[in-house]
Length: 85
Image 1 (cartoon, rainbow, N blue to C red):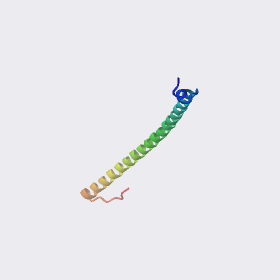
Image 2 (cartoon, rainbow, N blue to C red):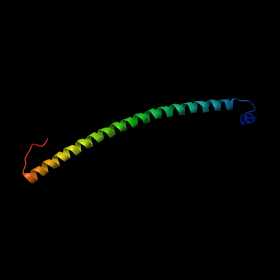
Image 3 (cartoon, rainbow, N blue to C red):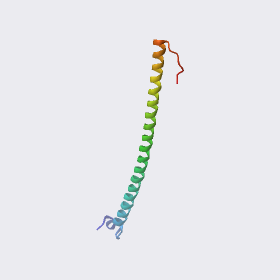
Image 4 (tube, rainbow, N blue to C red):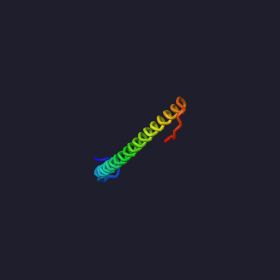
């Protein structure tokens, strides 16, 4: 006998309702995980774009710093004056 029948003296479809709720909870969890997976992929793409942008900025900074150091070196050592790019 089910615990519900012992207490209320009538039969019930409680196990079926529990199974049905468990099924839908599982479906919603699976849906949420799918949505979460899509969100995380989008975030990874955004992070990749940021990383590429930072890499390009660092490279251009290094080039400009090198030009500045060369310009300063030429100016100090040889008295060479030029327009800095």
